[in-house]
Amino acid sequence: MDHRPRDFCISCVVPVHNEAANLPAFIPALCRQLAALSPCFEIITVNDGSRDDSLALLRALAPAHRLCIVDFSRNFGKEAALTAGIDCARGDVVILIDADFQHPVDLLPAFLAKWREGYDMVYGQRNGRDGDSWLRRRGTRLFYYLMNRGSSVAIPEDAGDFRLMDRCVVEALRSLPERTRFMKGLYAWVGFRSVAVPFPVQARQGGLSSFGLSALFRLALTGLVSFSDLPLRIWSSLGFVVALAALVYGVFLLEEIWWEGVKVPGWATIAVSLMFFSGVQLISVGILGEYLARVFSEVKQRPTYIVARREDYSRLGGMLPAATESAPVKVAETARAGSD
Image 1 (cartoon, rainbow, N blue to C red):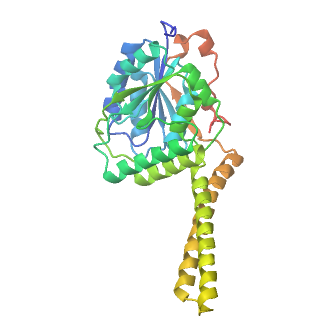
Image 2 (image 1 turned 45 degrees about the vertical axis):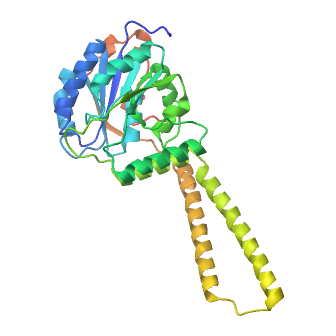
């Protein structure tokens, strides 16, 4: 069992996108739970381009609930919001949690107990996906199968962003320079001693999820391209199979010509062959394009996010240990140059 400090500070990162229906109940509930765990805490809310009253509600709740509000200049996506919150976090322990009540706040004491046992990362793992559609369940299983077959890093199945991280994990994540971020893969890539805590996913208490099937597909594609070369290997194998089939077919034609003489070639065979090979080539070019697009995004070196304004009501500065308090928080200007 590792030695953990008796006095520690907690930073809780909450990405916010159109959560006006949930914030008035969620923020006080989260604040009460954190206060029961440690007198030193802050709640970092990252407003990711909300179009409802989320920002106004955060400002109204901020003074009484120790909020640090990071307001993006536009919607940059949840991965960028999590990155900004991690960059801004100053605590010894950093917790990531959604604002829609699907991540139960009463599970945080169990997370902290595991951290005290010596685990550097404690992540919530869904008990099941009974509430998901058949298509979403099948797609999720396929995604994890492909990821863990084609990547050297094992990503735990049904483990999302709901987690607690020690400061050493946070600093490791902050050091990663990539801009096209797939956070679930990055959590696994940095390593450290980790443990899962199963939990039942709660229903949203208000509002509608903006994370539909198309967004999930884009995120899954980002994960596959960022952490796996399996798509390239699949199409290399397919190219070998097609070439072998063409060779066998060529031998068959030679035998037919030898025994039966030259016949007028069939248009159906030519048309089907052309369409098949054209489709294979276009798909192959598309997969190569996905990898090149990620390289292009990294080469441009644009920041992952831009902060329009930052308002700190956490009163955490005077409560932090000197070593932590002196650490710079670079998110306040625009964005860390190497944050994503």
